[in-house]
Length: 361
Image 1 (cartoon, rainbow, N blue to C red):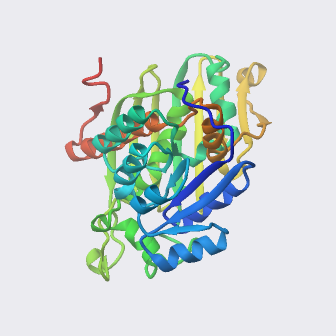
Image 2 (cartoon, rainbow, N blue to C red):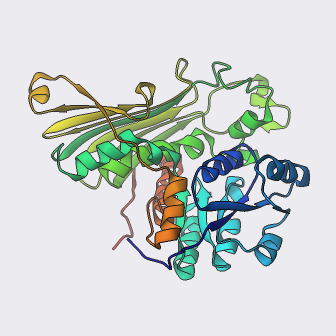
């Protein structure tokens, strides 16, 4: 892994964007010894002041530029809306700050590549917050594959299922802006594919490897009279279905939807190889996975396993700053996933597969 300058003292950190996800970042950082939250940034002055008071953060700013000019921070967490990721992260990178950015890294591959180049030029730690990397079961299955326990991978099945459109499990989407904007392209939404599709694509490709080809179908279902509620045009995709070929030759089916009643937020992954299979289901818990190996493979039976606890992205980000050793998932990984997302929209528009390796040397 790439190395940068080590940090011996406390890591002083600013959180940029103080909404609900910003609070999640603050809680996680406060659990890490030697990490000190020193600044909070948000255009909404009342929001950022309340946030700072809640988490005992001494410095409050309503612009990134002011924070960078006045605060002695080592690192930032970028938790602003997706369309601002590139501009905010690049400004911080140019100032020499280590950056953890929320997913997706950007809104298109070109912006993601600009972020990669800025991070490389700055020579600092850079990570994208693909939060399901925190799952011990995913890390355990990735190691099984890396160690050759499943043999040559042949088939992959992955899904991310949510149910907040047919139910009110997370609230009433028809009356709450925090859900309505996710259904409206004019409000910056890329649909379920852009919102959680990035997670299931990483979930499947992190242990198995990169994709060669992808064929994607996107669907927007009727949800309201005129497919509009107030200022929100309900035109962003609700479901995405992908058939893929990995660079190792394996075939796969990957899909995600907001329409699957009975599953509040379920990720599922099954990977089958020549000498064994493994499966993950978040309904079992984040540390449980199942394998079919050896005698179980011969009998088509499964063994339940419990994975050891692994550090979350926030802890790995701070550790990377301290050690000077870049950990995953970095901006390069985020850009790779952004290229896949862009290709999904192209594939749907053309109703044809897209070769992801085209143009690569």
